Image 1 (cartoon, rainbow, N blue to C red):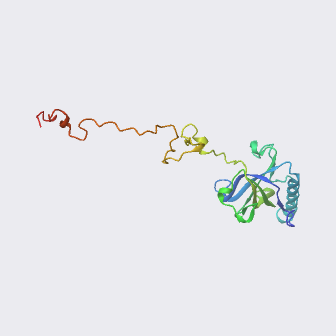
Image 2: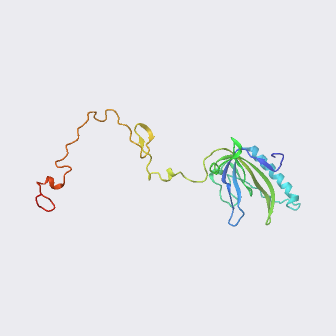
Image 3: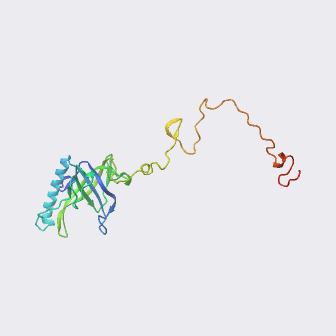
Length: 242
């Protein structure tokens, strides 16, 4: 129970996966777009699991008269799964789900996603991603749809608690192009510091160059004169004396 609502829960810290919190997405082609997120709840958080179990039972009791015409389904569908087991489709859960309870919550309305350092200011989309950690408000409800009866999970709001390793499966540009592109050159005057392209080179090091001015080499004979001025007065084009 949270805020005197027996069907509402504020989770402990969970990890977010499949976080569609900034743009709604349809679960299947032609379906209604919704905001959704999958919660990875550590099995060590027994308090959150107990709150969820109690809220599911409250939602089921409420639905008996309001949704299920007075009859509780003998096989009640619930929205929480064992991450060490398999999905309803029979496919095993991913490695990130091991040691967790797995549950997806969704809503038609855009949830507010705030940071723990300022709960009155919503985070930018760049700060919201699969893999981050958060506390989430969720609310359970009974449903009956095409003969299927069970308890679903509605998404409330999200409080980001800390960053985590992204679960999107994307790689950085540096890892994608390793061995192909050039890395920044280093500045010999400051080991490890990059040199900005187009910047003037470092000042000469004392003793590296002679300090006595060197006279310029003598210009070749006839420098600055036309070619025939240094060919015995013969024009090399006409072969005639000038």
